[in-house]
Amino acid sequence: MKGLTVRLAEERDRQVIRDVEERAFGGMGEATLVDSLVAADDAVLELVAEREGEIVGHILFSRVFVEAGDDRFPGVALAPAAVLPDWQGKGVGRAMIRDAHKRLQAAGEKLSVVLGDPAYYGRFGYEHGRAAGFASTYQCDALQAVAWGEAPSSGKLVYATPFGAL
Ligand SMILES: CC(C)(COP(=O)(O)OP(=O)(O)OC[C@H]1O[C@@H](n2cnc3c(N)ncnc32)[C@H](O)[C@@H]1OP(=O)(O)O)[C@@H](O)C(=O)NCCC(=O)NCCS
Image (cartoon, rainbow, N blue to C red):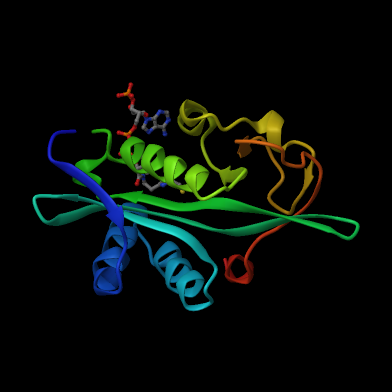
């Protein structure tokens, strides 16, 4: 989309991010999750999409671990992603996910997981097959993963503590 900028979220954006999350999801659950993840220092990457100075989208990736025996492999979990209702279906989500994936790979991240619509997240490389071997309370067809290098395909998926409050 023309004129769309994706940038790192900053402290001054917090209230607007809450508002975007609440309006996108029609409730406070995701906004509260975002605040809790940030407060607990569990956020790995947080971006906003801006158009003409207005924040129209927000995305957060938090730390997740794949645990197997003594091994603890760090990955990221995409949740939540939110676009203001008037701006949905115009490529804002796509721009944020693509930008985030580039930044995550540049930072050396190897594995990202998401719980969401496979018809949407499949566009960005996520597959249930890549996540099917993980033990998780979220295990289902909507649990998907994408790997950008060597990463485990089995083990227990441990999300950041704030997810437990959902
Ligand atoms: C889900 C969400 C983040 C996607 O962002 P978006 O900006 O609306 O999506 P985009 O415009 O980037 O979509 C890219 C493509 O996927 C398609 N698409 C959008 N939502 C889709 C869905 N649920 N299933 C399949 N395809 C979808 C779009 O039509 C578009 O297709 P195109 O490339 O052929 O034009 C946004 O719609 C939203 O905030 N929804 C409400 C909150 C939510 O459900 N968040 C996700 C759970 S974490």
